[in-house]
Image 1 (cartoon, one colour):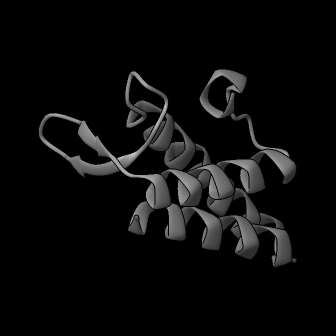
Image 2: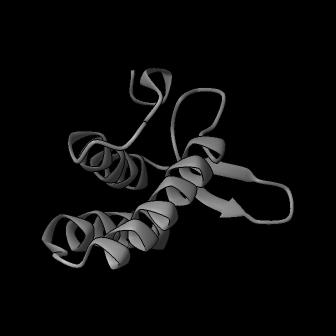
Length: 87
């Protein structure tokens, strides 16, 4: 899932950023990316290919692992990730 990879990249970049203004811009994008990922979770709690117009996901184990990895990294970095999304 490209979104999961992008989210993980942004979290890592935020962690390494020394410029406070740039870190703040990254933080805003990370917060939006976390919200999008959580909204794309299926009713069964998985993730997969997302159809942007309908936000319907076809669950996939590998993509679910990638999104969970990115969300947990975001939480560990101090971002608000709802517990329900990772439980």
